[in-house]
Length: 184
Image (cartoon, rainbow, N blue to C red):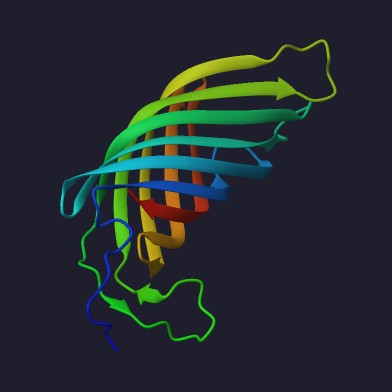
């Protein structure tokens, strides 16, 4: 059942701010565990279905590819575009105890961003070894789904692939992030 009149989807205004927390679920350059992360995105409308997006993402975890165990952290600053292919189709939630007053099964978006990645590696248990910091270009492709919608906010999940090219080779990781978004 469609609700009338439809309130604006969280990303249908002039812009948005989004916060996310999550974890890296697949890393293809080293064996790793305990990779957690957070993100902050700002977006501005440049078309009804297109947003300019600025993002700061950070991940940190333990890489156990060789001894000593190394803690690796990444902070990336990126800019790109978010494409929203579908118009809002908000419906009453099916569950009586929902996190949001409306459900939008079409609240899908695609993002492509590019920027810079700062990597820091710090060895554990080896005080005589130094930490290292490196800069690299990074590209990010993301697929988001935010079906829980309210007046001026949305909640959902984002799957993002990060690819960085450091002097010692490519680093790639797939992250899954729970995202909360506020309309501005």
